[in-house]
Length: 259
Image (tube, rainbow, N blue to C red; front, side, top):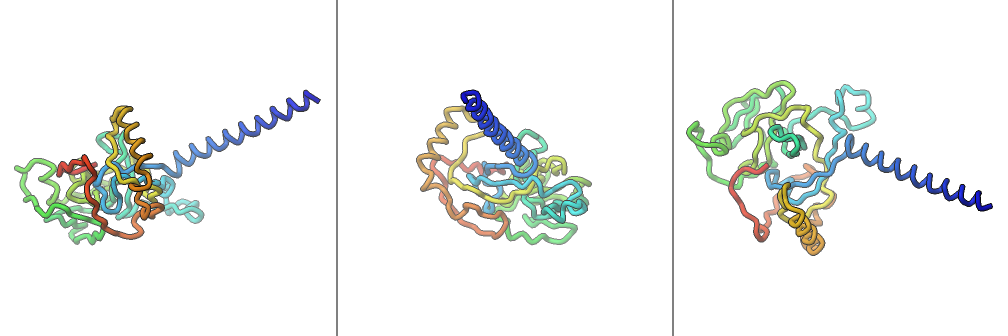
């Protein structure tokens, strides 16, 4: 009888172990191939994405061959489109992820004059863009970056397999105007949904453990008052809205483009 009990216990433990193992494999599969969590660290994509937004990135949507893939009839696979908000590896520092909007497609001729973006000679309609600096810097090679390319950009043809990406907060975004196009192989997926938004200036990526613990304590203490409840489960790009917010205590505006 005792032997039978031991056998039942081992069988139960094995079932739990197998279930846990399957769950871990599934979660990792989903994280690698389907979804990824990402936190918005800067205001370069305001007002669509705010500092402190925690978003889900759909990594599956840009499947191989997209619309020509037979699976596209069962799953929402498609090619990258102009206007998509994408998460990608920063070309100059591939271990860092950036989030921007696709403005120029392969083969497009991009130009900017007095802050207005034109595609193949036609001004682009951009209801999502904000300009918080009314000043327009002249088109002059004597100006240093980021001012030289911010408001004027010479006609540029996007190479094959590359994409021209820009931030919605056009005067505060470090993007393809300054460091070039994004290769298709660097694009991880499309920003899909905000699952939680916490109004706070996040610590820098190289912050110490002490600073990270201080941030965690802040989240626990201010969770209810600083959570943007109206942005919970907000589908990105489902609508455009602008809600100016007073700066957080200790926040500093450098006036320069942000990642």
